[in-house]
Length: 164
Image (cartoon, rainbow, N blue to C red):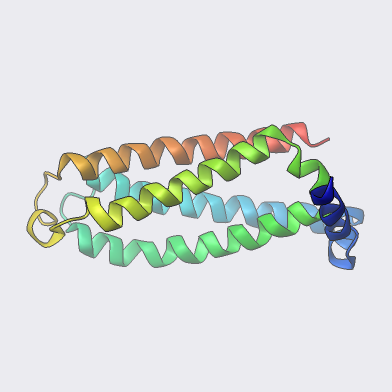
């Protein structure tokens, strides 16, 4: 398969080889990855719980998002970078791991859910964003987001337990 050849080339690069052959580097990268994912899921959960009307009701939706989402994006960038480094260390095996593939699909769904919320669901946030009640579409996007991110974490753990 052509893809396996490209992935084989990737994992044969000096960076990937260093990561896979060093006893210390991979665990450090993995630790940073996990911490970044915790920050991503935690900050997204803060916004989602506000949209569901469960937490942070004293803050407007716009204010909460502007306060929290920069941290989300920063942590997501770190998670993507560290995840890519870990992937490169054993690219062929990761690419054939069902938990890894599931995680990628779920990440794409999380992005789609977020895009739909920001394009359609957020609507007239200036009107409803100050209220404790949020529209059904916002609540649905938040519930879907929470479920997807829990599944992302579960698949990530599945990758860790099946890549021996």
